[in-house]
Each structure stands twice: as structure tokens, then as C-alpha cells.
Image 1 (cartoon, chains in turn cyan, green, red, blue):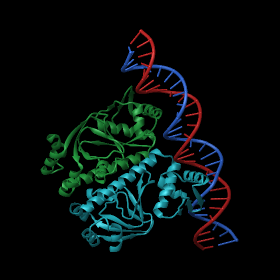
Image 2 (cartoon, rainbow over the protein chains, first blue to last red; image 1 turned 135 degrees about the vertical axis):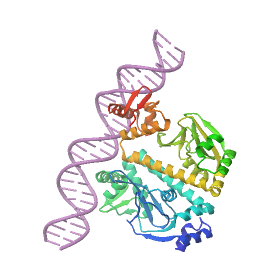
Image 3 (cartoon, rainbow over the protein chains, first blue to last red; image 1 turned 90 degrees about the vertical axis):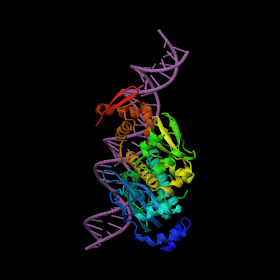
Image 4 (cartoon, each protein chain N blue to C red; image 1 turned 30 degrees about the vertical axis):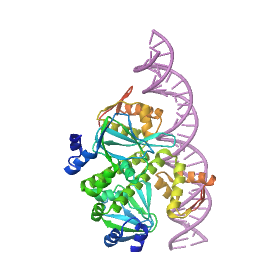
Length: 210
Length: 210
DNA sequence: ATAAAGAAGTAACTATTGTTACAGAGATGT
DNA sequence: ACATCTCTGTAACAATAGTTACTTCTTTAT
């Protein structure tokens, strides 16, 4: 754990804090597709990502989903932080997008470190800032763009996160994450293929680089 | 200033912190409709609302707007906080919705107090939590609801913020804030009137209570 | 008093997105 | 090899939202 910790957070935190983290943090490995937190659950610890990626989702009244953003290594979950502090329930669902390694920090430590370490405070504020901006980005996409543009953005983002230009997923999956229907996704994917942006095959979509 | 400060933040902060705020804070009065911060501007101080209300807006590439949420007394702007700390530009526009009184706190103090006062830390985290949830709410509205439902929510929220059940505004104004067109708003308002939810007059909309 | 500007109502049309239904292609299990 | 299930493609249609155009009614300015 210590090496992965140093690699991802070494430049951010002083060695004293790194030691504390290594001391009280619990390493957790979550395989792709597994749920990390569910809407309505209480959060008792805060995750620091070491590797992999996590997708963060919102749910509507019918149980349908909408992708908010991805967390990657070096990130933490702003939502979780506020939930920890405020003792409130989670407003979001988090699912491992890839096999993921994270360090779980108990809530009390989080509060303690915020008073004690300036670097930790900065990290927490930075995290909020990033997450906030990602939410604004999500709002931009939904409010200002048509579904075809949202779809292309989504595909390119997914390529960035998974580091593979061929995505192994189904149209139905994409429809869930964009909160639309499978038929619409198939239709627009075909349109994007005709435009030369992507190549379609069963269970796979190759996204052509820019 | 001291009385207004005590009234809004007296239960939140210890008296030592309240004194510091009164000491370094600068009272600012912003009349209705006046701009407080513009997209792309740097932020050098952080606002604490004493009275009134502020609307926070996002802009698309064509210069059209979208209302994100309102800030009310006792609130502060999460965006401003992160901007202050990170020395980045504002991602949003803020305009006084009502005549508004606020205390401006210099950035350096903010950083200092976060290390020094536990109550200040809690306030900052609480603020983030609220703003985050409001953004999620906004996303829910845009992604999960039709324009007629968004419109009714908007009207009711406006009633809450202004504390008047008759809104003095134009259809065009509403269209800007919901990022749609005047014709659509007129159409849906008429529909809501027929449903008995509101009563329409020139420059005014009476929202019937639930 | 009259012209001009602003606000609202409405019709007709277009564009986008969502829904239903069905067919064919590919994978999987026995 | 066969039945079954999953995934994709498409057509046809419905619902929602955006656009253009024109009218009427108020308010404001000269």
C-alpha cells in the first residue's frame, strides 16, 4: 500500500500525514462492476483512489440512472466527504468502472487532519473544486447540448478513463448512463459511424481519435 | 453590521470568530439586479449573506443562461470559496435577485480561519454540502423532468426566495433562466393557468399555494 | 394624442427525442 | 444442431420542445 500511496499522493502530502494515512487507512480492492456506495446509505469512511476508476451516478424516481462523472487515481469523492461530516445519507451511487484500489479513511481522522495539516485542507478544497466543476460540466452537457453531442462526449470521456479506444459495452448500457433509450443510442451511434467518428461492432465501439 | 452578523451567524460561530469577522469583513450592499461576479473574473474575497438573495447562473457558448440556484441569508458561495483558494476564474455569474447585504471576507482570512476555528471549518463544509445538493437538484430537474414541471418548480422556488406569491417578472426573463424560449414559456404558463396552478397578468404571475 | 416599444397569446411548422414493434445476426448452452 | 437469449438495426409513429410569424394589448416617450 505504501508505495501506491507515495506514488499518488507523495507530492501532495507531507511524510507525517502519509504515515498517518498508511497507519489508519484500510486498503480495499473493488472489482469492475461492483457497487461501492448506494443511494440512501450512510457513509462512515472516505475513499482515496490509488488505481482504477469509479463512476458516480444519480437516480430518478423510476430507478433510471444518469452518469455524473468519473473518479480516477488521486481523486476522492466530495459527496462522501460532505456525507461523512454531516452524517447524512448518500445522494449518489458509486460503481467501480474498472478494477479499483482505494484506501478507506475513517471519518474522525478526516476531521482531525483538516485542523492539523494544511496540505490535507488544500487537498480537500481542491477535490471539492474539481467535483464542483465536473457537475457544472455535466449540467452544460445536459442543458446545452443535443443527445448526439452528449453521446460523442460520453464516448470520448470513456476512452480517456479506460485508456482504450475500443469500448466494450452495449447500447443499452450507454442509454442508461445518458438517461435515454436504447433505440435512440443505436440511431445516433449509427449516425456517428456514418460521420466517421466511430466504428461499430457487436459489444464494441471503436472511437476514432481526433 | 454587528447585529446582522450576530443574527445570522451567532449560533454558528464562537464570539471570537464573530469579532474577527466584524473586524476584517467589509459590508457591501448590492441593489436588485446588480451583478456581483462575472464568469472569467478572479475572486479576491468571499461573501457571507446577511439579507436578500443572489441568483447563480451558468452560461452557454451563445451567451444564453441557465439558473443554477439561489443563495439566501446565512449562505455563502461554494464556487467563490474554491476559486479563492485555487486562484482560478469564476465559472459562474452571480446577480442580486433582491436588494442584498453581504460581508466580504479577504481570502487570506478564510485560509487562516480554516486552520484555527472548528466552527468555521464546519460552516465551510456545510456550505459545500448544500451547494452540491442544490446542483444535484438542478441536474435532476433538467435531466428527469419536462419543461412544464421545471417551470412550476421554478415558480414555486422563486416564491420561496422572494417571499411573495405574486412574481413580478416577464415570460422572457423566465425563458432565460430556464434556458428555453419565450414562446415555450408563454405556452406552458397558459397551461398551468388552465390547471389552476397560477394566475397570469401582465408583468405578474400569482402562484397559488399548494 | 400619437407613435414606438415592450409584453403576451396563439397558430403553424420543424426538429429532436422517446416509444413500440419487429427482424436478423451472433453468442451460449444442452 | 438446435433452441434460446442477447444485441443491434430500422421503420413508423407519438410527444415534447424550439422556431417563425403575426396579432393584440399596455406602457412609455415625444
